[in-house]
Image (cartoon, rainbow, N blue to C red; front, top):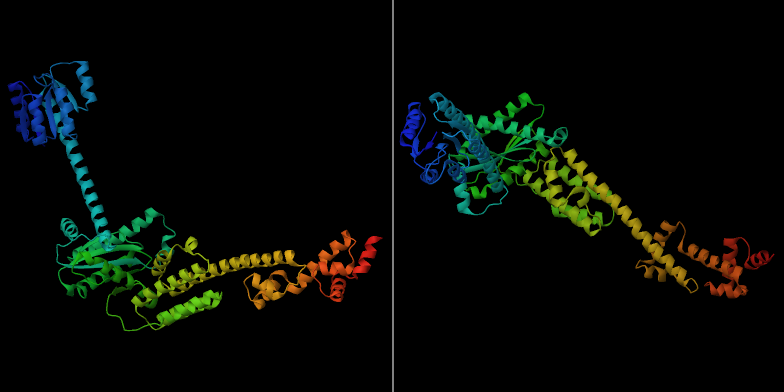
Length: 524
């Protein structure tokens, strides 16, 4: 503990210094006034200052007020011959630890200094713990940024890698992911605090085993488990010591948990700047669980050279969606996954399949005015969700959910659009019923083919276009019969009938009696 004594009386200053040194407190330096002491504050940075109040040039209280700006954490003890309330009040305001009156007893001084030492040691220990915690947090953040390819400055990466000790064993770097199988099903019963505890538990087991085998490992935050940056001296370690270590970790986890884990070990790189390549390959390996199941340790071995006609499936999927055949679209998706998983296709190909199918779905449906973003997030969110699924049936269920959602939206959208077209046709009839309207004419007005318009009109109105037109015209004829003295043949022409006989037949069929009898009956 570094101590500064500020006392203008030489003998008193020496006496205090000897007491402290005899009791193994130190180092101790001395100053004869406040101004001299301030110079020592900047250089010596004492942890404890023992000062008199009444001194020339600058008194003790003025000195403390100035010194606290230079070293806020230093403790201060005042020695004074003056038992004055005003001094004590100012000392308290300045946060002075103790105010001792001269002449003081040696035991009293030593007791006060010992109490200050305990406070300082506790504070230093706390600061060290905070420093360690901050160091660990910043290192985790640095590794995470490296893994996500957020850093590109070579000198910055090299400097911080050295500072964080990431290269102490050699220049081989690998990302390993420890993933909890069926994490989504397990995590729904946990709150965030429990999830964090679960992930840190995995980290601690892994780091302890790896450290015992002299494998340098550094944890960073990773979804559905924990991520580790490994530093190795020899590439051959991957196939020997490393595989054994992670199998041991897997076995240890199974002893005290009900769930299983999968370990994915990425490709090694020799430059930390490229570590994101290792993470990407480890992440792709997680899809192996769809084919061979979880509870395994996967390494990035060369995959069998297999290909899938993904482009062919994409084209057929887009055609099925555009035609509104959602059941066929779902079958196309399920068929390609069954083919891929049934024949043991490589995980890299499964990752590409996830991405291509998701992009095809989102893009095609967006062009059909169906947005999936509200319910499923954007393409990246949906893709990442698929990558975390372990069982193929859950992959199928996810696609069923998307397709059913799109199917419902398409039905509602179609219904709305169709109703708009039919209302447009009805408005056209209301304005032009007195003219010779043809099916082709009104279909063209709605920008539809005559056959499709005829089918759509019947589906929406539950009657044919001709039936609707006749009923509308007869209704107008009834209004004229009731409100005007017009001749019946004139009324027929006014409502769009060129053939009087056809008008009479249509009127009787719809109303039940002829136009003449209807007028006569109404006149009574």
